[in-house]
Length: 487
Image 1 (tube, rainbow, N blue to C red):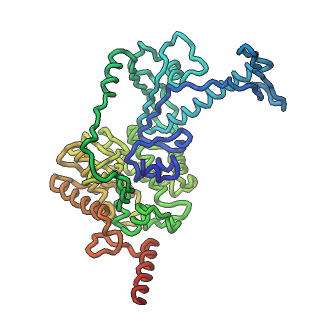
Image 2: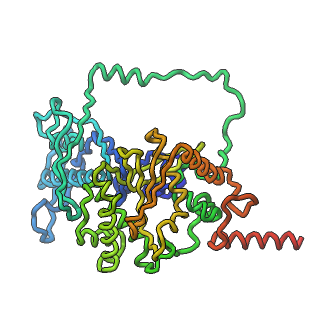
Image 3: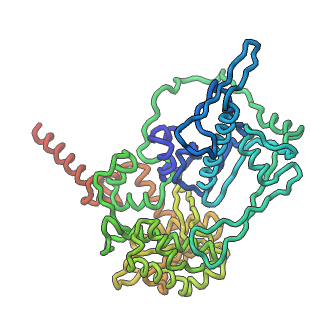
């Protein structure tokens, strides 16, 4: 709650990746444009309020040509408590109710389409299909009626296959919507009454000073730290402190490419956008039997990520990367196994949770395999020359998967897509996993102790010296030294 209170809006809650150790609550309006792996749409049993309380209505009727004239309706209250509906009051009230219902269903559709992988809908509804749902029926009741769900319905209902947003050689398959009914009966009432029992708390032994002081401000983020956050700290602890902890606005507007050696980077096209597009296509392929995308799909995905689809070099390079990987020995082996694309990983280091997202996880491999793609330009250099920047990520992925699956060994493969036939594969045994945990513990300790954000003696990772945060720190130190000398 305290973290959420410091944010500007509900949308910020969703986009603050590092503040993700919470259930995010937001209105449907605020969720537009955002996506989540799991979305729960609750309280669908709420009935719509009647729209007929107005004394008069003024407007058009559906389907009527707009010629500038308006319809008028009046509900006239009578002394005996009844009322008389005059002129077009009934038709306008009906039109308003239908418009409100349509708007609610449109918002309902927005809520459903925020889910990327899992969707849960819940709400109290009327399962009596012997009657037509009324105007004020809840969304849950309308949904149950539309899907034919009643008290005797099966545990799931079929959902027709959706039209794919991209061109696929194989059509999407029909899915099923699981139905979990929680009927009102005596057993449920007994269960709920028991679970609501509260044990009284005694206050006789409570003593000491009341906790009325403001809690101390943490010297590090008390939320999950991602691999990108750890990498930023290793690159420059001072900049990490300024941006991630003090929450200062960026002091420069430069957008650095994914690969510092990316020669073709411009404000309109950089390695990050290109890499995101290639990753998105590979993710879809992993979920669709590794079927390669058509050229039109490659252009569309590049455009979605902000890369000019008319850039033939970008389209050609993306196609070569994707086709090269699928034809490689590692790519061919993945076609024979069940792959989990974009797997979210969590790892506990002391009191801190680390998180990351692996491009592919293969559980059935012996030992389990993690695959990470890199779209960096190699400029003729071997892939191994790029690995120094990803050793921390390698340790995080390997240790997280090993502990999640409770296995003593894992493999981590890095595929630089410009050289897909030369993957770099690390074998992690028990000793390697122990070393990985030690390395991660050292980095996390540097953050949680808060003593290495500036140029501290003994700091394993010092300030980079070239970023705006370091420049501002240097000027502050020089000014302080000048004041001391003057005194």
